[in-house]
Image (tube, rainbow, N blue to C red):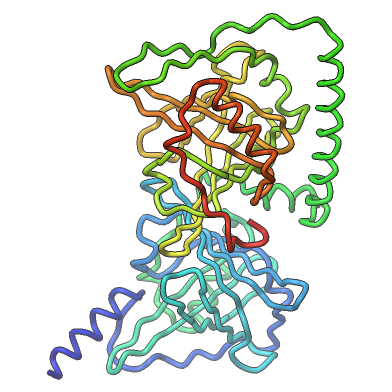
Amino acid sequence: MIRVHILLIVFVVTVTAQIPSLGFCPEYPPMSDFELDRFLGKWYEVERYFQISEVAARCVVTDYAKAPSGKIYVSNEITNRLTGIKRIIGGYLESAGRADEGKLRVKYSTTPISTETTLIVLDTDYETYAVIWSCNGFGPLHAQSIWIMTRERIPPGPVLQTVYGVLDKFKISRTFFVKTDQEGCALAASDINAANGITAVSTLAETTGSLQRNKESVDKERLQSETDSPKQAGEVIINFAPTENQEQIDIEEVEGLHDQLEEFGYLGKWYEAERYFALFEFGGKCVTAEYEVDSNGAVNIANQQISALTGIRSTIEGNASLSGRTDEAKLSINFPSLPVNFDAPYWVLDTDYVSYSVVWSCNNFGILSTRNAWILTREKNPPLKAMEKAYAALDKQSISRAYFIRTDQKNCPATY
């Protein structure tokens, strides 16, 4: 029985950590005169002790942010090297010791089992580096974790030399450290906003104003179109040879959508209201798609969802490019982080830019085809009028609504 208990302890240590060792956790004093407010913000993981939970991980970022209520939230973002999918593990931070020492407790609330971790900030200058240590004891064994965090994704050499001096001071071996791959990581929207000095509040205000202006522009455009002579129908964008149980789809009169995407505000955040079943969205809730134009004029896409099974948030990023005429809403989407790089068709069948959008995608594989359809809305819980417009667009193109499933947008984070 004792042997079984020892094996169980070894198993727990191996799964949850880190670097297992015999004996009790060493005593490392937390940093004194620690200023938590200066410590908050974004930190990039540069090196760490090996951990099972971070196998195949890259582009690891931790963000500490204080809410108006004073509560400090933690967001750990990890990109899988194999799939390119990001997962975000959230929780909150609180002091675990005296107010003037760097002893902190993190409680993770988005994992299947709520967990707590005590972190010891050994040293930091708040502006360039931080050395963080943690240790868990399991009877006669213990497991240590150490992270080297920096404010820059790829820190300069002098900063690392300072960090190594801290490790030597505490006689912490550098043998077990592994470097975190931070090369080629996509620039997050929060990074762009920080660089431009844009706060979340001002961004929200600008987005709201933009949507109102977009609505006025759309209304004006529609009024003008009613007084003009009828437009000629555009050429057929999609024309599949029907196979058994396959609909034939002729998409007409999708004039000028692509040129008007930015002008009328197609860019920005959309919430997934309904979709065809897709394996890559299995168990997904709180699904969003966000489109933005970077400084080079490229359209970047960030698709996010939360697993209804684990509560873990995941993100996959890609880019869109025109695949038809310049006056067609016929696009191709590419996700460079996927193991197999390919372009997926993405056709906007109909949208009013301010409330709903209907998107269609189909790939042919010989006599077989795979198809996806999405109803996207600007609101998590769209009004009935917006959904009726989306259904009308589907009916117009003879797209069956029998296969649609509703996306769960309940109990989603307020900032999601």
